[in-house]
Image (cartoon, rainbow, N blue to C red; front, side, top):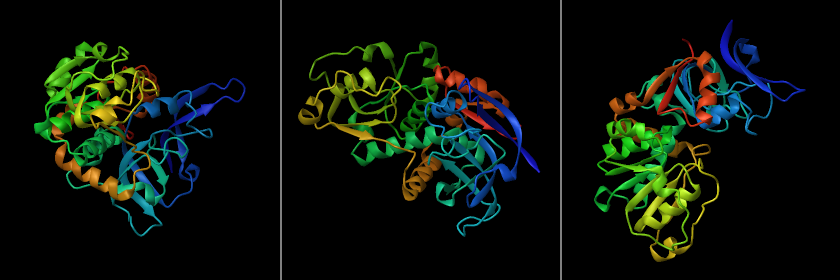
Length: 332
């Protein structure tokens, strides 16, 4: 039997890539222990790269992208999973170096899977996806370093994106005052519906300054931007506060940053990686997502899509034109 998948191919002469839905056979799937009937996937920045030029992430073609998926186990050579189990996968370079979730079937290593937690179905899991998992890991890291609602407002940069949207919703639900940074003023209503109490225009934080410190404003921050914005934010974090760095949309360098916030205010810069997170940390994060992410706000972030929509959405997310979370019904 065949199944549908988004297949990316690369022309050997021109180096150009094309992506289209094709019918594949199960024998085309890579070797691994667990075969999953995929139900839903989603769209992340890395997916946009892998659907398009590859961004150096794709090792060989033809390729099936999709760094996230959720579905039902069909067959397993590993005792931890049996047919009928609901599972979710994020990270481990699936969708980059290994065929991913933009298909009706996937075959992956058992170590890469996590049982779907109680309280989430497969669609909700992909409304969360890597973006939501990363947001939860960032919130957990901030809390592990002492962040509590009484210490003051928490800043979320890139707030209208996938990670930022989920971070705003989680923090608000936990009782934090949330300041959302965006360069898209038309998203103010969307962000306030998620729970943001303050909207900070991006332009207020993008100027590079050489001041060693600025006024203390933020008890903590979930930062998806880096670059000049992170350099400014670090100078504004309150004494003992922390910044969870989860992205580099504004560049890999921390422009204008000095050592001063770290040694005079005891500020912590916490790196958040979701790709290689250990199994136990993933279980903890998914359990927290099921309990701490308000599902009504999650639904407000979702735009539905199908496999045939993915070439367009891949291009749009690279241009910063995708809001919230895209949930891909691979069987539609």
